[in-house]
Amino acid sequence: MIYSLNGKLIHTEAELAVVECGGVGYGCKTTFNTLQKIAGEENVTLYTHMSVREDAVELYGFADREELKCFKLLISVSGVGPKAALAILSGMNSQQFALCVATGDSKALTKMKGIGAKTAQRIILELKDKLAGETISVRGQGGAAVSAAAPGSNIAEAVTALEVLGYTEGEALSVLGKLDPSLPVEELIKKSLIGLARL
Image (cartoon, rainbow, N blue to C red; front, side):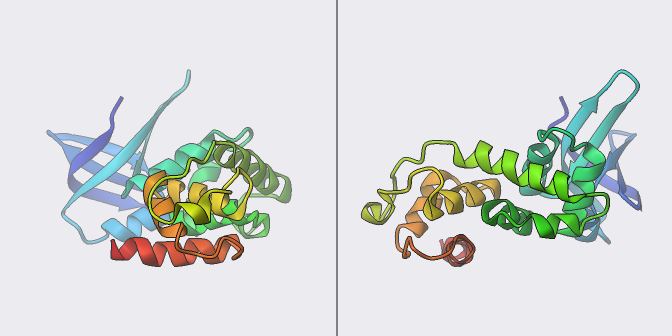
């Protein structure tokens, strides 16, 4: 398994970045967002996912771990392949994707190339259940405010969205515990991200 690549960026084109490591050029299928982040850079690091099938071995690379995590979540959904996952993550960043899942905004996903209404609804349903189904324990500051953070509550959904973005449950709860749990999920996430940026 190749966890990451660090080397010279020798070529880019639509949905592809080639990184040279030890004299070997590794072609990584990637998103528009990653291509934008690495544009003009001489040396880059891409976090990778390798797909091995009977007829092909493909490498996917991303500029940050959050985008890689979102990619892995997407391809875990039945009927969603790597091509569709790249299309979604090319049209929105990791934060926007997490918000879509947390708030059930399937319409935003249908705006992505090749994503129909049924597929978008399946993504929301499967990932929301997968993430929000985890037991949310109370940790960090403001425990009283999140003591009722049962799976499916606004606080629990905000926690899972923040975990998709790479924050730990403890980090998320330490900020969410200071907020009004009756706020809409999207508002909780936005306020939490501002708070986490200050940590």
